[in-house]
Length: 146
Image (cartoon, rainbow, N blue to C red; front, top):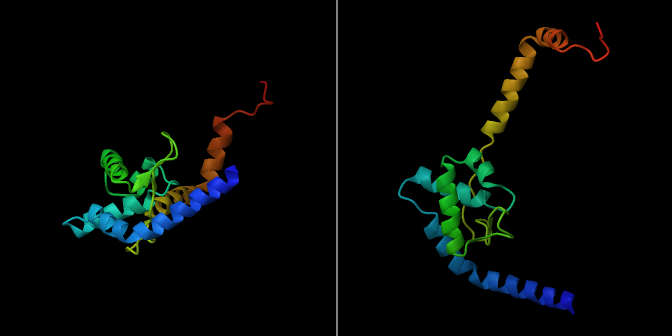
């Protein structure tokens, strides 16, 4: 009987979501609007990344907003009913995604990840023999008892 109840509740939620998408679209659009186009793009990025998978720290790495601004935005959107949490320590998750609402989804930048990889690759390629030699000199072997 519990499985039947869960299925029924899932169906109800799905239909309510479908019915509410048009209203939600205007609410989301208003919540993510700004006079400055760049700021609006950042608001959309933060909302898009608030997907239950990305933590505030992850979102901070991608967005041009400070952590406190991201936290305040998420709290505000949560009060509006646009976000929810599974439990207190879980990341926020949007109830309706930008895509579901028919709104433009921003491109998620990946420069920070690629720059870190490039920097670490460049330093390893500059002097690979020197790094290997330093490693052997700095750390004695465990079997060296002298």
